[in-house]
Image (cartoon, rainbow, N blue to C red):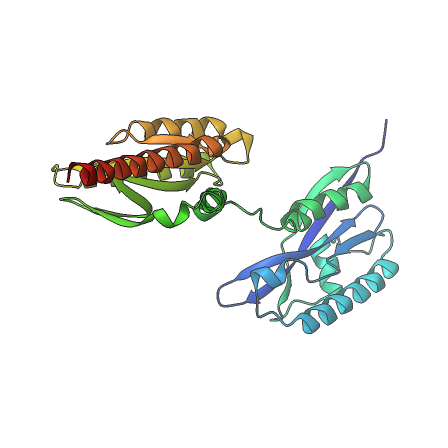
Length: 295
């Protein structure tokens, strides 16, 4: 059976502002009391700190981290197996030999503990949990404008983009401003909605907000006649598909019977706009032609 040994660990924190207490983890020290072994891993670059704290002094941080690593190397060399006269120590005690407790921006966390058969693997696991897991840049989530951009390009190709204008629909209770609209007896209004959000609740809330907007404008029956059309972007996280489908159902049941197109239906959506605009123009031309002939 593989021998397992107890270890303790402490996390090195970069505290940017002692008043707010905001910090980012930048390193880990692991200590095995039975053998006196000290292992550590620290951030070697400024990483995501610049994004979290834009005013961080990069040179000062790099110098400080270099000094901590050098001091930890010295502590690791000097530690050894405990004897009868050695006080029981934990990782935080060992780490403070390299970086004493003071009011600087680098601080040690209280010690944690565990049991492992592979101390090196344990160090990597703890580092990944507390430090490197936050290194991935935040994933770009598409905005409403991102969803509209390919629509605009296709409308421009068909010389139709200029036909759409901003329109404010005034109701008895509320108003809604649509950036893309045109009139053919009633107003046709088009709204891009990105549901590429972080969680299911956010997706449903956004759909419910639009349900509320439309209901507030339609309430009282004083609003101009208008037909809503939504083109929607799906979440990239497949775990949010159910919430997305619920959001579509909420939109489809909103007042004025909105038409909802998914971004995969982009060509159909643009073709619908084109057909309606061309039919309107043809009807107007026919009326003008008939009027001139009757004269």
